[in-house]
Figure 1 (tube, rainbow, N blue to C red):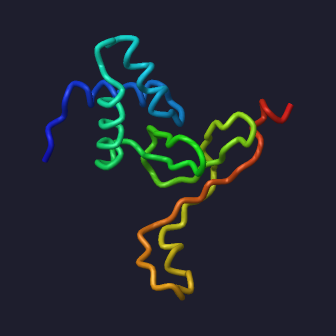
Figure 2: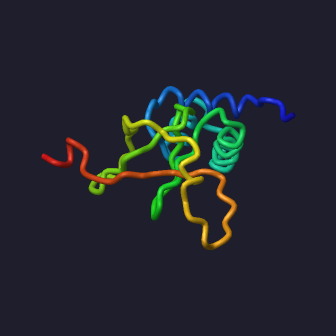
Length: 125
């Protein structure tokens, strides 16, 4: 079991305080304001460790920067096609959906992610 470092705590607190689906750069900028000596690599490494440990959720964005979500329960997201922001979608997450796939290619499924896309209200104006 890895010990919790001060840097990891700073990164975790930044993700929780920002309360959105933040990029690693946004977390780095937030932490650096209070702790100017922290490196970008330290922030990136700790974000990945926190997501691997289940403390935060990593949201992979096709063609864009990964995002980090302070909400760890299983849920879906929507990405605005104009501004690129990520939002939660209020729809039930169905566990085991991958078990309904006709597996003609021999995959060993481990889960799934669904990313909806559209325009957020601000960009739709």
